[in-house]
Length: 156
Image (tube, rainbow, N blue to C red; front, side, top):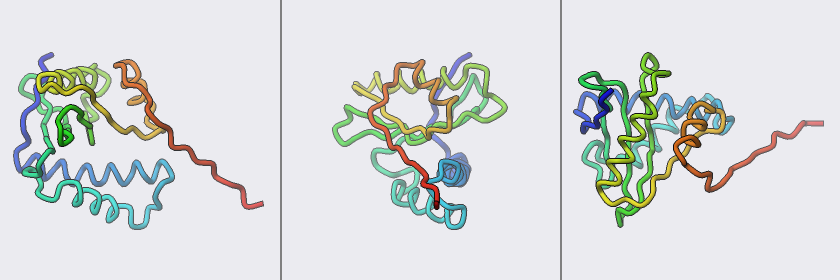
């Protein structure tokens, strides 16, 4: 297994952009944050704000993830203005490659990429219902830094 990060091509970016908007909207729907109606438009607006210049947006690094020569997913990495912190906005391993340890290997490659750039910490967000990702991040040493909680009230 040889994991590498390659800057996205425009075609890869176009696929990432549409796929990520759809996934982001669905994650918000699953978590109960958003209603299905209007979720795609809301997600698209968020992406337009975060990536106003697409691949050329300052501080945003968009990678295709490869295992040897095979494209297995993508990662969107943000560096703060002082570059000592990074944030993973999105990481995705294609469904057919899951369960093979490639997600963990990709995270380690991202970690090394950040270390090479003298980054001191990596942050990320994970939806509470995504227990597979939560388990991986816990295993890799990520710490919970805050909680957002909600209680649905009965109408009675």
